[in-house]
Length: 352
Ligand code: NAD
Ligand code: IPM
Ligand code: MN
Image (cartoon, rainbow, N blue to C red; front, side, top):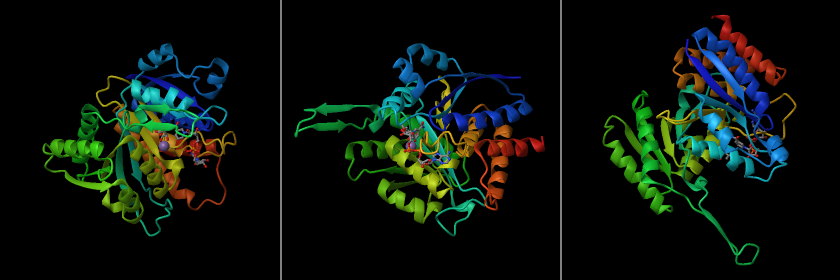
C-alpha cells in the first residue's frame, strides 16, 4: 500500500474547523482504497506570528517540501496586519513550490440553489486554471515619497514567457481531455497591452498543437458578466493570477456559495508538493462557532485524492458530497461543521 506523507496546515479562523472535517473524510475513505496516510500538522498562522514574529522559517519550508502533498485551511487574521500571513505563508508556499496551476473547478451540484435562477447543473461546469505564481501577486513594485502628497505606489504585474507558457500548456491539456474541448482565455488585452499580447500570443502558439480545442477570448469585465448571464459559455478558463482570484469567488457564488468552492495549488511536474485548500478564507466573522461549511475543504480533499492518483476515492467523496447537498435544500435545521463532516463520512463509507 502506498504511504502518503501529508502536511496539514490548519491555519487561522475557521481553517482548523474545516480542516478537521476534511481529514475525517480523508482518513475514512483513503484506507478503503489502500491509501496509508502519515499526517504531520504544522502550527502556522496568526498564533505563531504573535508568539515568535515568524510566518514560515526556512527550516519549516524545507520540512514541508519533503511531503507528498499539503492540506491547508486558511490564513489571515484581523489581529495581524493585512498581507503578513497571506504573503509570508500562503503566497510564499505557492511560489516556493511552483504552484503555477491554481485549479478551481466551478460546478453546480444537483439540488444546490444558485442566484442565477433557472439554471441546471449542466449549465455550470467549468474548470478555471488560474496562474498561481506571477501577475500582480509577484510583489514587484514599491512606494516612493511615502506619506507625502506626492506618494506613488506601484504594483507591477509580472508575466514571463516561461510562466505563461507552462500554465497555458496545462490548460490546453485539460481542455483536450474534456468532452467540450473549449478553452477561454480571460484577460484585458485592450488595456494591459504588454501582458495581454503575451498571453494571446502564447495561447495562439501552444494552441497550434491542440487543433481539437476551440479557443475563445474574453476581456475580464465581459467574462464576469457572462459568468452570471451565460455560464454555459465556459468549459476550461485560463487566466492571470488576479483575474482568476476574482473570477473564482464569483464562480463560487454562482455555484452555491463560497462554502462549496474547492481548489488545488498544483505543481504538475511534481517536483514539489501540491497544496489543496478551500477557495474561501479564514472567515473571522464566523470563526469559533462551529458553523462554517466544511464542504469546500472536503471537495479539496477529493482534488487531493485525484492528484494522488486514487480516482475512485475522489469520486466516492464527490458523490457523498453531492448526495449530502441534495438533502440540504430540504433541511429545516442548520447542521454544525462537524455534523456535516460526519454525515458525509457516513454517506461515503456506507456502500464501501
Ligand atoms: P472569507 O472567504 O474568509 O469570507 C468571506 C465571507 O464568506 C464571510 O462572510 C465568511 O463568513 C463567508 N465564508 C467563508 N467561508 C465560509 C464557509 N466555509 N462557510 C460559511 N461561510 C463562509 O474572505 P475575507 O473575509 O475576504 O477574508 C478573511 C481573511 O481570510 C483575510 O485575512 C484574508 O486575507 C484571508 N483569506 C485567506 C485565504 C486563504 O487562506 N486561501 C483566502 C481568502 C481570504
Ligand atoms: C485565495 C485568496 C488568496 C489569493 C489571498 C489570501 C492571498 O484570496 O486563495 O483566493 O488572493 O490568492
Ligand atoms: Mn481569493
